[in-house]
Image (cartoon, rainbow over all chains, first blue to last red):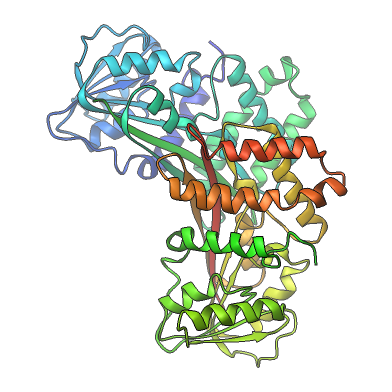
Length: 267
Length: 267
């Protein structure tokens, strides 16, 4: 498993924690389902999103799974510490789910498809276990949506390394913008893709710290060894790019990034 | 005056018309001032924005000026045809306004700063004629905010030509993201920059036509002769880029662009 895949290192876990705290409202103000609904959360990782959606929907039941047993154990500990009792955690493979057709009222997937070498197969499997008239909700980032001031060629090159590494592992770091055609092609109806733009300037020091520094730049910084060893960039340029990204969180800096939240209905 | 500066050719005028019709609500739902306020609109061009803000604020008085007498005459005709009576149109130079200090309750500037070789001087002049506790509102695009699917290197290169041409004439096609530091540096207080993201997929054929084709792509298409003659790109690559931009308005295409609307108060 490559190091830039979310949720597998300590720093990554901290990063995802920061991300989920500061962006909760933006991404999840409408993550609401009806009382009694049973929701499958695919690729829950260490439970960064699970705790939010489980606490927001106390009368729903969640089945949250991940391929990593280690992540599942951490997610269980988080849920236990928060007194969350409406989630069952399981170790499962998104491509081969042990559930009958039409088992779930809804499916929720957050920051997962971008990493998959064959997300179409995964979505087909998630659709299989979804009830008729059930909905799927997918949240993904899009690294091509990142722009900022001061502008920096080196920062753009460093970000592009992340996009290229993700592409080489079969993923797509720019998948957010594509969720409408992705869900339409998978046969979902009533598809809506809702952009959630994060705009950060010096009037918002919490997001300067929580998003620009500790989420986005930390993520890019984390791929240095791999990017340099794959000869995508030289270490000097990469470091300069990272310094320039940190500058966007200083005086006169501005940083923009957009998450996308798409929903569709199975007929 | 170079051809890609807004509002000077017939096609440009049509393009700006399309833009202002389809994006009215996104940009102007909050373009509201108090009864009796006197508002200076700087760089009104042919009145594409004037008619919107004048009709939304019938109890305000507007003074709308532009450097181009031809544009002013067109703007007057538009206003007359719509029965707008609360606007006085004038030919003026944004760098040398014939108004006393503190003459206006508010200042409104839309799609102007991006073209100016010295926008700081212009903002200082606008601030001079603004009353104490008056507000400035600035709306600008940001070409670096454009991303889409299908992704296309050639489309990105064609867009980059527009950014470079604007830079060579002293403007900044990526100014939208920078409006917070721009207004802070000009000494305004209570500064807020509010992004207005345009997301278009095939569920929105009106914006596919009105924004992707007739606004953004038409604008880029309009710089071909200049971009090629300045040797920024070859004609074949440019044409391919334009074709790829049109593809983003077809099945499975998605286009994203963000306008920025910033406000600040003079103390």
